[in-house]
Length: 481
Image 1: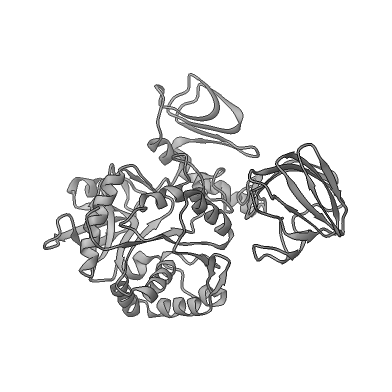
Image 2 (image 1 turned 180 degrees about the vertical axis):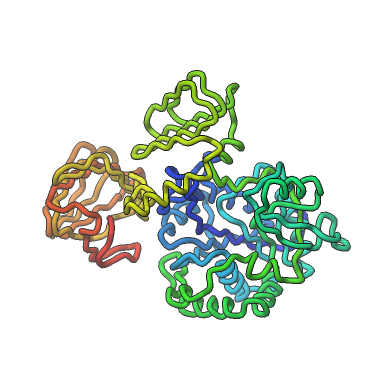
């Protein structure tokens, strides 16, 4: 990168990714999964904007994802500028306004690069060259959006028509207009004209100019965001926005609130190998294919199968004679869909919600700030779990009214507090925790602690827990360890 200005990345991580179910679920959505590389999509986004030209990222996210996001940043050795917690989803405009207000406290003339956390960009050098152009425009007061060069007449994206070129900034144009998702014939005409780009949802915004526009175009959103920040509280490494104030803010995208109405809007078209990975079909398109056009991940055997995405997370998946299909197997769900119907997977999520099931919400492996647990078997009056506790982490001091627990250490070292006792367990050692007994579990070692937990009792729900002390600020009645 060549520009002198330090860019402040603002990463939006509030999406649910329902069309990538069953891997993406509300408590661990697609941006927190390693779908396109060995890193999660959030981690890839952060890695893309790491270096001397960028400030530490400011991340705006769902409250329920905070510990997973903090852990993923720790894995990258990245200390964010802030991790801001939204109490409820309010679309992109309030999230970006909050970020701008927080940055303005330190530097009103800061330039922020707003990025969704769930995009794939294959050409990192091209992306950074696009950032260079956008910084030049933003430094002159423009509100810049990144336009993606269309690869086909896509009907699932909004489009932006570019107008006249900006004087002195090669590759930057005035925005002529935004247009909604078109029908196929209209999309073909956009492609033929060469004047249209896909609306990527990425922006380069000078903080002062952006807030001035919000004050003019959506003063009520600006006022609500100011109140939410004024009522915010620090919670460990997180900034928790005022819940009541934020809930009262209108839910609106930054496109509708500002970009479609401002006279300062500009666009930098880019051909950078971009995808928003909005469906299994899109993931198939950007993945490496074998000679038969298949994408095979996990333990997979295919016979006479073509042009399909086949993924097994834990179980053998075998296909015979399938073509243009999506087959995804997890330990609790199997999805089979035609590739051209992959956008309709979200209908399954809606059906699960209507049936009051939980498969749209949680995986069998549930992540906690201290590690994770995974249900292995559930039966009458018993449940078996595998538990993994990260080094130097601990479960809360807690008690259960209705269940007892047996712990068997598989690997690592456990420090157990049970009633007035405190003792250590190592591999192949076990202990028993009666109901109505205060207890806690710690990993004092340098490697993950793995154990098997066998719960017995008349009620085994995750809400049968009372926390007396918790280093993660979760004391009181809770849902899960």
